[in-house]
Amino acid sequence: MLASTASDEAQAATLISSYRAANGLSPVIADPTLARAAEVQARAVASVGALSHGDFASRMASLGIKGEAAVTNHYKTICEIVDGDISAEVVSTEFKEIIEEGKKLHAIHPNIIVKVPMIKDGVKAIKWFTDNGIKTNCTLVFSAGQAILAAKAGAAYVSPFIGRIDDSGWDGVQLIEQIANIYAIQGFETEILAASIRSALHIIQCAEAGADVVTSPLEPILGLLKHPLTDIGLAKFLADAKSFK
Image (cartoon, rainbow, N blue to C red; front, top):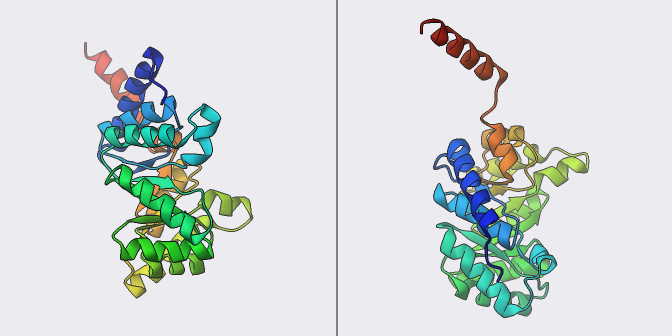
């Protein structure tokens, strides 16, 4: 596991202030950059009680976190920082291997949510995890049909990737609305986690469409603060206040 540096701590302070300003105590999910940056951003998220989530496995190796012991220690570090659900993704695609890997991830910390891909053996594994008291996040969801299967299997979260859907020429937010409507009608308890957020508008649209949680970079969250009329109004107020001095 890589230790944080003085510059990391400075970055953490900035992120903490930013999250407090932009996010308050809302259950917004942050998608931290892994290794040092992940720990820095996780500290910022934890300081405001937000939920942490990230596609850890694909980035750790590129940042020098290799081997089961190192990966496990890294997850433990994140869990010590963040008070909330943390998705840890399996890299296996066969049922038995997904189960074994998921059990190891679950054993790391009670807050670990086993992140499983939307494939046939993945859905089968989600059902097994549900029956054995292990919460899951079904990822790489791109259709309402897939979301139904995930909910029927008992996934705690389902993750539609709306940005990627937009990139393909379809409407990602419309999918969130469709899934939310189906879940409400059928009484599914699975929470909708809107992933691949690209902008502040995406966050607003997902909230309107019925998403329970979003996984978002910091920039779109900070974008929620901004409006030109706020800036104009504040500038006028400060100018008027100055004239009375």
